[in-house]
Image 1 (spheres, rainbow, N blue to C red):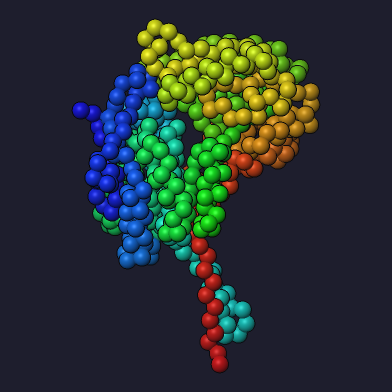
Image 2 (tube, rainbow, N blue to C red):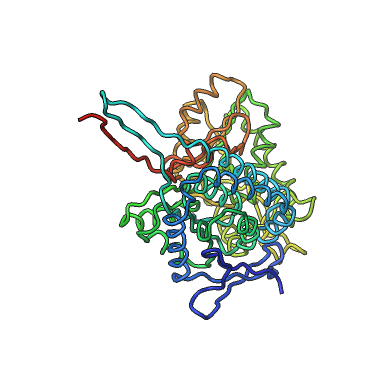
Length: 483
């Protein structure tokens, strides 16, 4: 029969509203097999969840009980840890990623919950005497109802990194999960559902294959915050739709992360790390390495090394220990990447040409990684987010050109710099228009350290102390004790 993900509204697990019990299917991208089903969310479900979240915020003590919120987050983390093997297996099944990538996602999520449990008890305001007998109190208060829209590429981490600070701040939440990976999200939220002290309706979740639930959340006057991770195009639509209510938005959008490689770096480490960063989750990660910019004095040597590294990547099902890269999320995305590869020769040279493997992998959404050498910085292969295992190889003559090329797209989410010169590393990292810059490393992300984008990679910050800001309001209370 397989698994089924139901909607979670006001403390109850329920099918889709409207009486027809509409369902959709979830598939294994490695095989195309049906894994289970989900209740297809409707606008009526969204309205019911928003109403439940509003009641929980207004009528329970949740927003005013930091110790309770901290304990709920800790209990959630413990229960997630107890079921992690089951959840990791399901995540690999419905997303296709490697089991070690799924394990990393669970570890990061558990750590995030525990981090924000600590911050829940440390939401301090300010108090000052303006003049004798006249005082100002600046209080930090929960913003209200938070709408959290979760993508499929890292569905557990990207759920928790918004939900944990929302809960820590005292907000109630309505979550919209991606249908492709909702079975994994369903297991995660069942670890939360029966935690003692969690008020009914304080966290709600709906799955849909379309956009009506998300559109209802964004347009609703009763939703105070939207936290979204996804493409720039959808982010712009959300921003436009939210204008009517002027709600707070936190948007982490697309990326085109450059890696700048200088001659004095550890070349072996740079090639191995950047190759892994370009193929992590089959390149379906907003911070994935998308461009490698190499100093012209070492370009030939590094190009040879990257070609060898890309050709050695073992593509296969995420559940197999020998696999180094899993499938894309579905065959439509596989075919999209294959079409792009067909036209890549018009923009430069294909150094390693990706393809759909034959044999037992032919039924899945597999594509081998591509490496292309491109000179024209205006090429769409440099300018556009590809969201697949496709790395562009570029060269530069000096530091100034490297910075100019790296900054030449509309994105600014992440970058890396590879050099043994500490002064250069500091200089270049400050010049790059990116929210995160790694020095001689890649994809090092922590609950304690904020991440987010510049320019069309979005705004707002996730993780860290600043991760709470989008879910909090500052209230000024003035009073006089004289007269």
